[in-house]
Length: 424
Image (tube, rainbow, N blue to C red):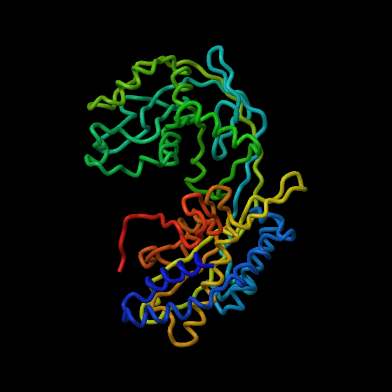
């Protein structure tokens, strides 16, 4: 309960920033008293009930949860985002794709690597028939006006191996020329899109993880062997890749680690790593199931700054059922966040009805597809309902029912994580 109250106070501060501080403090304290553990429990008990079946995206349990959210939004009095759509004006509809992988392999020299045992895939990285390709190293896979890993290289029809990150010497990025990292740094999708645009037949992203950590991560993926993506006919279709460890890359390219270390530290990179260009064979099979799902959004409209938007978000999906018998209820992840979102929304609407509403509009957003890879929020980011340049901030609430060993006997705390930015 106290976590939800603290979130309410933070949002109120942002929404009412210019009001007198004494009045703000008094009003916030008064309205915060309306957030009770009883309210929070009621929502969690519904969301984590057997009837919700674990709220797996694209399944009946998730649709039931979405209907419950719409019911609550209507009772609270939140405005829908689309008044012209009868019955579901709170929905932002989207499609997602579930990828189920069949046994698949890669053969490099005398080694046979199994998908989801030695390497893994993201996106629709299918090679339904066995395909032979020349394997080549393309550094960080970056091409800009000042830096080009593809200079004098032809990658059409080849399997390209790309390092994670970007070239850095003495903590200075060779892309930005500063200590600030570029948007290539953590964006494997951008690198894959570029490689496919240059004609690559397959893209391998080299994980920055150590070998043991990389293989342990694959173990966690192995149980379902499923992948998920947004069903968009855009450049997102290019966002597919295989992921290998650095050790695996070196074995495939028949290069040694000392050469790679020297290559990374060379101020005058890019230049080619002294490695062979062997032929690899691959067969990667899978099926795609398309599913419809929904983000759910409702608005408490502001006053004089109503065209500026503060988002309060949480995800309402979870992991569903295993073998149609075991339900993953998701009470904490993220039933607790949705419960907080609903109680905070109700409190803000009460304040508005009593003439003490926010100056900025508050958009209460329940995202779908989070457990599939942040798909609901990713879709909103590329298809915003409200102008991005008028969206001030997003306070996302996730798993506030969790406690840790650093605060024994005390549940009155939250962890705040976010960008180092101030907005007024």
